Length: 610
Image (cartoon, rainbow, N blue to C red; front, side, top):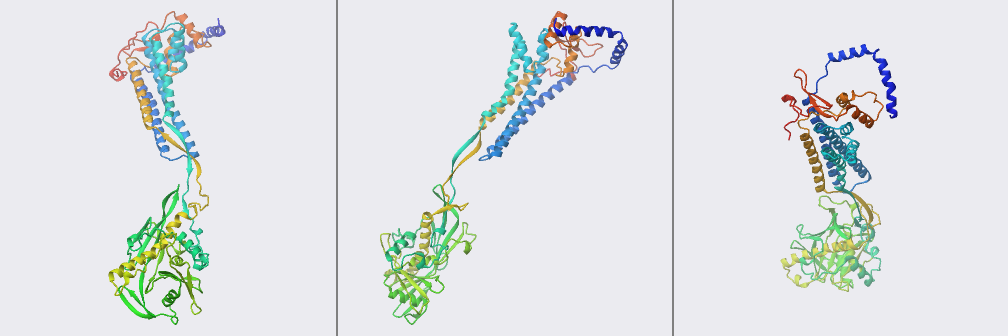
């Protein structure tokens, strides 16, 4: 006899010695219990409790799945996840998966507790099997029964049912892990290229430097070869295939508006920024506008033509000190060939005059150009201190030096250039002095076309220079104003979700839950089920346990073996008739009725569910 069985003997003796002393107390307790009869088992109440417990487990799992799908959807919309977003996603995905697994475990455990009763009712079992079936909701209980049946070669339908439940229980609890196949953290590496802007401050001809002609270009004004090379490089004067027509003054990526006013011609160019070698539009547009009028030159006098009206004559010569007279005199004495581009500098104020002149033999053009800058939508004009380019002096730079003229009686100096044809390209002013247009008497149509043509020529030159410089000048990072223009490596983590898999997994688990519930309800149909509380199970086992005393210190296996020896016959779950028309009573013993008669309609347990 085992140690526990040996220790049960003093307990039996002690119990015998106390029987006589406690007889009256026990009798009073029995009488009190008879006066307060326990409420009989109600099948309808138990069925409602079963459905509520199953619905609770099902809804808990479904709610966790819905939240998990929402979590995947929200985080997958982010282009990349920072460290804290990755941590938040990991926490939420693990938490929601755990809640879903808890819901599945609760549901499957309750289904196992319901399966016990039809299994115990279908045949008779030894107490060792009864103990395993009553604990089959736990994995260890199912494994113990299967192991015993296999070891003792007692394979039966009960073995297969418990095995099927065990597999379903394990796979169901682990099925949430399949969600890991539906999404993945992707690490994307690459080079982040900054947006580069042209560093206009690096050009001496912007408003960030002294724009006086003789200071800007460096070479002596009479160093014609160096001067022409510098001008052609900066202004990119090549490409004028046919300068006789306005339509031929095209500038890549610029817009020609002709005319924008009664006498004005305007070119506009939207500055470009650069990213990965490709040009992108910036938020600034440069507008170049010019208005030119004709000056007819005679012997010692000149006439002005405005709106096809001739005014004059006005005198010019050494004794005349106005600007036009000085321009005509300097042009006449200059060694520069016609046509001449003439700009004027104030010697005292070191400032450039707003107007420029194009001089020919018998006439000249007086032009008033203006350079402005606006935002991309042209709704806001850039303030002078924020501009990249000067408003007028940029036009005078074209007068870079074959010659300069001035005398002691004047407070300004004239600079001239003819832009003659060279290896750098055709002459920029070719056609400006085409005599066919100005044979006397003047033709109004020719005069008007030529006026617009010359205005286009003047307005075009700064735009050509800016367009060319926009691509060749040094660049800096637009956002940080840094000279570090190379790209930087980056690592971006994003959430990739396969929504097809998410749908299949979610639908599969939910449908699997529903099928498991329906199968168990169908199998339990017509059997009185009990809840899974220990007190309810103890009350049911009281009939067989009372046949044996002294086993309180035994293990479950030792107690089952002892009970089998005392009972001498296997037991099953069944009913016995109630007294005085009361509902039938359920018990776990031998010789019980395996039929569970229908209860009144209000207490019938899910009989028509299958």
